[in-house]
Amino acid sequence: MALEQLSDVVQRCQALPDDRYTSEDHDVFTISGRTCIEEGNCAQVLSIVLDEKNQDIVRCMGWNLLPPLIQVLLKKDSQKLSQCLAIFNHLLQTCRPKELLIGLLEQLEQDDLVAIAESLHLLLNPLQRVLLCLGSRKASSLGMTLCSVLDQLAKLPLPHTKEQEEDDVFLLCRCCSDITHFVKPFVQEARQNLQNREENNQRTDSVGGELGRDKEDELGTELLKFCMKTLSHTLLEAQLKDPDTLPESPLRDFATDILNSLSAVGESLPSLVFQPLLRRKQVTGFLEEEVRYPKESLACLAHLLFVHHLAADTFPSVFSPVFALRCNMEHVCLLLSRTEESRIQKGLELYEKSLVRVEDGSLPADLLEIRSFLTVPQNLVKVMTLCPRHDLRTRGLKVLQLSIDKLNTEAKYSFFQYMLKTSSHSGVEGYVIKNIKNQIDAALQPGNSNSWFEGVQLLPLLRKVLVLPNGPETDLLQYLDRIMESLNLLRYLIIRDKVTENQTGIWTELYKIEDTFLKPLRVGVNMSRAHYERELHDTLVTKRGKVKEESMLSVSVGKEKLPNMTSESQIQALHSALHTFDMIESVLVRIEELTEVKENL
Image 1 (cartoon, rainbow, N blue to C red):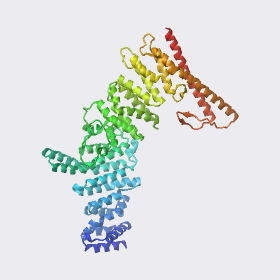
Image 2 (cartoon, rainbow, N blue to C red):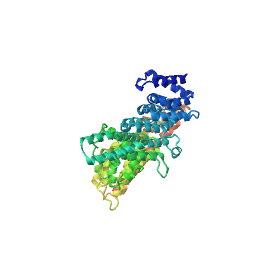
Image 3 (cartoon, helix red, strand yellow):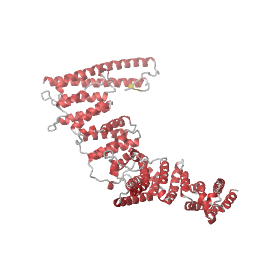
Image 4 (cartoon, rainbow, N blue to C red):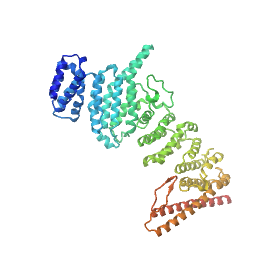
């Protein structure tokens, strides 16, 4: 029945010009032709399609047969495969490119992961052939195609381990290679256009030349958008393996091809990376700069260049490490401000690589006037305290210390003041105070004297350290890290600095410290101990009275309440708290003893 309908409509249309085909003719040809292919009458359809008398019909309506043909090709149905492939190839040669493009892109849309990968593998080469047939009118169609391709690629899971990438378990690596092959002729054409444009610019600056340049730039613009979207999606999410770990890496090759494509369309990789510090680019065309050069894309580009050293031959080595650090700080700031672990990891890696090349103790204090040099440490604090991955928290602490090491003494002094003011986290504040102690110790070594970590300059910093945030009512458990490091610093100063020399100024400042820190701390310890001893007594009484009773004590850490605990856990927590108060008190007593001994010498 379907074959008869197809034959009838073809015979009727043979005598008509293509502009006289009715909508009914289109519908009958589409429905009957698709049904014939689905029912296995592929040989008859192939005969009709190849008939010389039917070429106008095929040119006008043949693209409607693409859906069942592509399904056969995807399923690799051996009985229909050769005939359907012949029909498919003939349609590609005969039908109008615009209609073929629409039909192929419709079939590219898939939801099943295997179907996505297989569709890309099958259809990218035909799409390339169709687009090349469009000649100079292909730019917008290429952009639409690349957008659809990347949308499909984004649905595939990324390989996370070396084994997954080697085995290509999700077929994403094959798809990346297919995409590279797909864009290659268009990149070559854009490169040639760029060369021609440069030659024309040397000969003429006429208005006609300007208009010609804008027209030629359309292809480069679409390829630029493709590269930027690839950087901000697939490559920003992917974790590339080093050559030592994975000598042959399809993802690393794909990233290299993207960077080479950027260069081919006239984009300077150093200019893109250093854009935050260089004068904003004057770009012709319809894209605004923020759209043309998305910040996440540029951050990913910086990561590929500085961490993985891709396209290193295109990157000059004349830039100083400090200049590179200043430029990369904007990218680091962006990456560390995100919550996605892939972005955090890239931000930490880029920051570390940028810092390693800088000489220790060389960064001046005026760099801290640049917003990103203060924002990045704040983001690092969030990573160290909130990131669920332990390795990223640990690496964040390592990078923070590395950044401190690169500052000169004045910059360290200002940085410590800033961190004590803004971190709002006892552990971080304790770490900063430990660094302050190390800097004081270095300054007190023979020949290492500096004006920032001894004498009059040091006192304002010590006043910020040796103080209880909320006086006697400070939550000692919440601020334990800060309090213990502050006590350790004070004990060190009393032991290390002689009363007669008073290099740090601690001995003239001690009476103030007694009032602002030591006395309130003693009161706080006594109040906290009394409270927890009462809670422990009540808990023990309750436990003896009700053997299986669950405790209703609500324990808070900061402002976050923890779930109710059992009596045993509650008793253990209370004992631990009392032990902590004993530890604080023992250091307080030791400081008092040392002070008396020193003052009596």
